[in-house]
Length: 246
Image 1 (cartoon, rainbow, N blue to C red):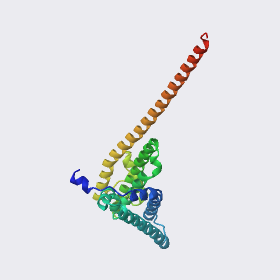
Image 2 (tube, rainbow, N blue to C red; image 1 turned 90 degrees about the vertical axis):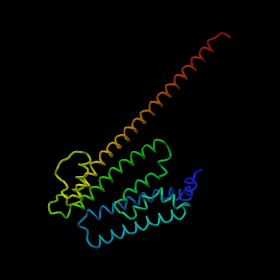
Image 3 (cartoon, rainbow, N blue to C red; image 1 turned 45 degrees about the vertical axis):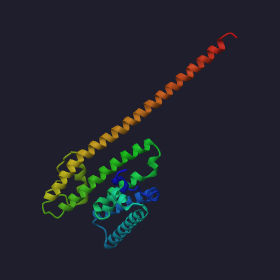
Image 4 (tube, rainbow, N blue to C red; image 1 turned 120 degrees about the vertical axis):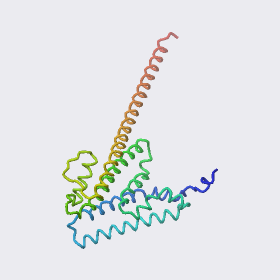
């Protein structure tokens, strides 16, 4: 065993059991956090009291996320290995715009998807779809934040930014909304380049899932045909035996 392998200790089964048991609650909490965060950004008609309640709710959920990391770090058995494999979750506690992508990590851990190969393929399709939505939303939000203070900008609210993001990703190019600031255009280039990769991966994933489904259906039909052929041959053999003179 190499020195590197000796230094790399596996995570404790306790932390894996903890992640299995908390996967559904943390997944649901992440969705609520994402919805509250979007609401706080997009709704400009909230009263001060409503805004404070929303910020307080986001703060409580953030404390839960921190507590979850602290508990897992305490029981993991190998903090170095934990941080090596869960580094993105730790970074997302500091950079808020990365936090929505942690939804993918919780989705990946849901025990329901590990029950069969078909559920694992479904999980992959859902992961790619959610990643696409989060990718477009994050890029659109950053463009909106970069553009909204510019006097010549026409992307001045989050709804228009998200519309621009999806039309850009789909290569429709309506031209009704365009970034004008250097930072906004830089982010737009990243969205365009990343969009090509995302669309390619999404298409490949869906096609692969459909191909696997067709292959499984073909296998079942072939097995049914073989069983029917076997039953026919067995019936003929019995008929021949009964027809032979004693």
